[in-house]
Image (cartoon, rainbow, N blue to C red; front, side, top):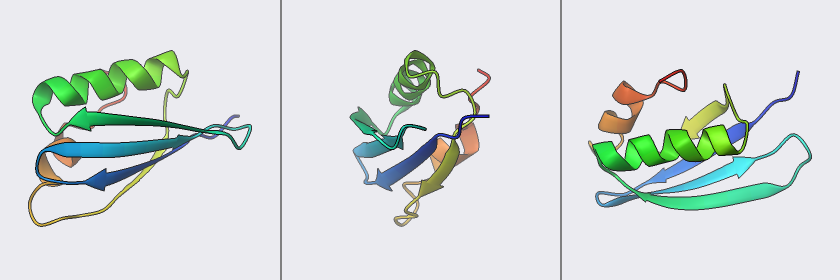
Amino acid sequence: MSHFYLGIDVAKAKLDCALRLPSGKFRAKVIPNTLDGFATLLTWLAAQKAQSPHVCMEATGIYWEDVAQRWSPET
């Protein structure tokens, strides 16, 4: 089984995402911290074939809550 690791640096307006691939290489993407941004994140993860990544995020104030509550790679 291949493991993907997703780190998310949370800010009010954006999410800086870093995806570690099983090969050890990294991919990065900045998305808006909005519902549309979360959909973009899931689409990007699917394109990377990262179906069930291990996720770690920085909990900045309340700004992490929406993405954490809506996280669903199966969506």
